[in-house]
Image (tube, rainbow, N blue to C red; front, side):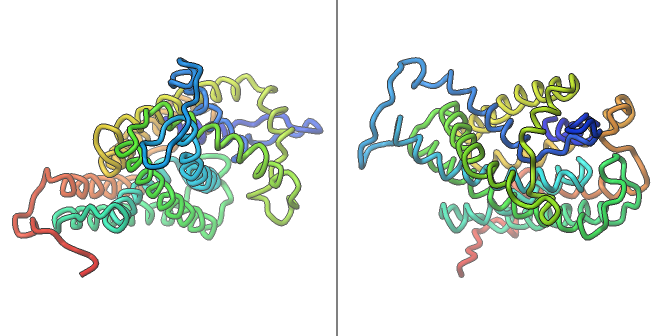
Length: 343
């Protein structure tokens, strides 16, 4: 639902400077709001409850200040992948980019194999390959679709859609490595999920407020329109629209709950299982997008049902089939032995 809210925000016309009406397409501002939301979970951490920041010691499990330093890397990866995704959201329909995010399973499997040394069997690799096929079908439906279902997609050329697809894949590779690192620290360091989420949020706010957003405000707008953002105007637009404030408030609540839940899943299972649920939630995003299009058309967001939607649905079904194979719900006895990519 958070992604659909982004799509809604991108389509809300808001008065900016000089009384010019423009869509609230503010990727940097939205990433900043996301990290603010994550930071709010600091109130549930031992640091706040005990009012003590425990020192870290070499050779012992990381807590307190040591854990906070470790989350700097995962926060940076989260920042990069989120920024790439938010730029891609401008040019893709919600169900398309959400389903393409299923590629995170592929990258997670590869990082788990080579980095965590958790080798997958042949049945699991078949599941990964089938998932790739499903995502290709979903991406193809975006390129073949002639009609754009929201205002901000009316005149987007196919080259920008292809670029957006590439950005999604790069973002998922970064996100997969981030989740693998989080799995390693949650399992090996016994960190609490609320610590991870809030510390990453604080790092993200720092990186954005003092490095990335100042750069985005001084680069030439006419040459790098995807990177430029006037942050003062972003706040001006946000506080000039009750709709924007409402959806931003809902977004903050959803992101905090989403990240906390994701960390809990990683803590009690592993990164691959967490990312399997990332793919499965695509069906919910598709349903919510359709609901927004037909029930809340005044926001000019979401997408309707068309003939090309059948290809999207088929691609989604193939992805689900691949996930069932990967998790062992569908088994091929001849593929049960372990397969080592390194030979």
